[in-house]
Image 1 (tube, chains in turn cyan, orange):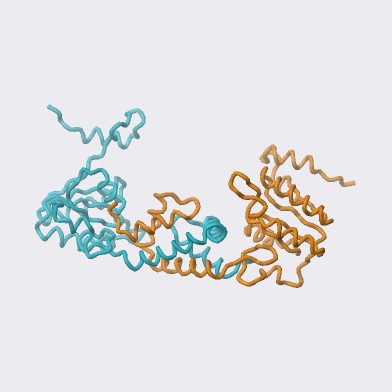
Image 2 (cartoon, rainbow over the protein chains, first blue to last red):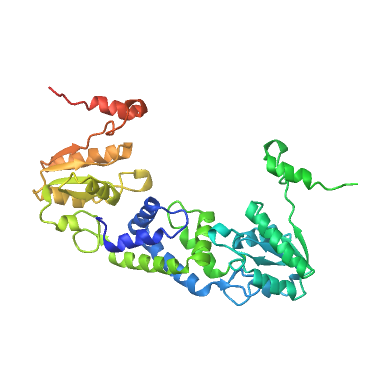
Length: 199
Length: 199
């Protein structure tokens, strides 16, 4: 290889990023070294700082710098409802909607035995401790609608039932403003099966 | 925003990478913090080391850790032919073909006035000094076949002519093993115009 050793190491290190193959890694390394050495330094600092500073909230497993994330530390949030989601991005999305005042539990994935993701990786023991505490009245299961997401929700519902915690699944159906014509069959089937009585 | 400050900074820093938007940057940051903190540390080190160590070859502008790149430092390479390419990746590709024993000049781009890339950014002054030295007999112009690449080759050919250096353009035509049926019209036109007499 004709590149200097530090450049080869950089190209290889960039491949740890998801979705980055050898060609993209090379393009990224060239871009940083040719046009944006300043940004490369900032990125190195941000990576080091994030690895040191960012941990998990002790209560909900959300990324946090303190022992508790801002939501769990906020006394005005309703600890009676616990929304179980797959990823920190889901927390951000629900928070952005402004329609939820409860707390969260972040699984950081869904059950996927083939990828080695089981109850331990998703913090089921921690979730069970939280549900056993007695403060949670309802667990809202907002895992994805994939087979794995549904299975995860099912297992958590069983855990909740053991501790007399009511569990619910968020509604799946036609998005607001969506036209029936363009909605896929699976969503339509869900929307029909989950219809609500008006009168 | 519900993410801790260090995470937000990391997501923003990742956006300096080419082709990485807000969603990809978030996915990358989550991946590093959830599953691969070790790789994040290695990437930070590799970035810092590359920014410090990797400079440009004084002769050909290729990325190098020493004053000269291994090719320019190699006395057995033919200094009489100079292959002018747009990127370090082009040097790697030609080296891999094993069919060239001359030296290179890496422009790091092509003329593109709208993006602010002119003769200064491409090191034309350095190229002219090299051609004026007298050791180069032929400049092989291997810039891309885009309008900008052709214009860049044209300008360099004029510089070479001023110093009595012969310039040539690499052949463009049907790739080896390519079938005429699947070759695009532009390439076919090039292949026909550049036909060579056999007898």
